Image (cartoon, one colour):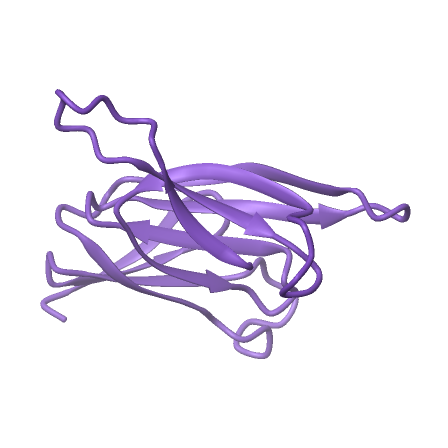
Amino acid sequence: LRDADHASSGDAASNESPAFSFHLSNTPQSVPLRSAVGLHDFNSVAWDASHRLLAACSDHGQIVVWRIDTTEVGTVKVWELSKFVQHKRQVGALCWAPPSVLPGSPPLLASGSWDCTVRLWDQSDMLDVLAKH
């Protein structure tokens, strides 16, 4: 992840925030290998241990998970894997569980929000809510 820019996707007269875009590159000086646009007002990003899943969270209570794959010829493919909207307030923290926590299981993501919850997710669904945290 080289940098994050705010693309001008929102209308100046509307209340829409600009979209967050990210650029993947193999060195700090190189041209981006792939770019993607996602959340508005993002707060944090987190890679899983395999560096194939990237999660980002926003002021609007959203979490987006992208899958990033590189082919044998070096082509980078990025696609949105999941979007979670169950938090009621802004999400400020994300953390992927190390693979040793649940060996053989899908990656587990924890998110912390200003709604006083910590939520646990797999790649496609919410698994649990820890309230008053």
